[in-house]
Image (cartoon, rainbow, N blue to C red; front, side, top):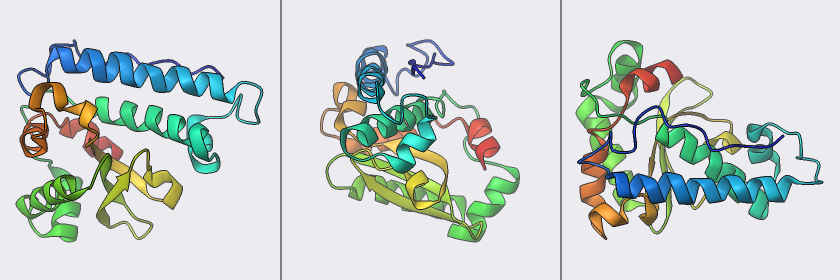
Length: 191
């Protein structure tokens, strides 16, 4: 199976001023594309040549896992974004967040702290555990919650390439901007 860079559901400038067109050109157009290209090269003539992406993530190791997970993680992240008119989730997701974290503000604070506190590069995830409760987890590098039997709901990319062109070393400013870009309709459907 040959993997392809998925088309974004918005224009390259649609996330401005929070994420610039220039950042998307590099982050999506170059970094994400490189992971896709690397993955296609690495699966050639292996047992994963015709495997689904999730299978590769769950079973592969080393560079093959890293590139597969980064393709999946980035796709999940980019498909979660849009300039939102809806500032918080509603319905059953809002109820689940309240059950797991207290208030939406408590969840937002905990997710922000996890995003700021992840040392180096990686991802912060809101996941549903096997008991149906929501958790926030940190994953270094290409880490993906699918390997732990968790259902991803939301992620924030805290690799520097996600924000450096717009925010330089100011991860806190990027995380603050991230809250203005969450497509809660997509996130609610994942829940």
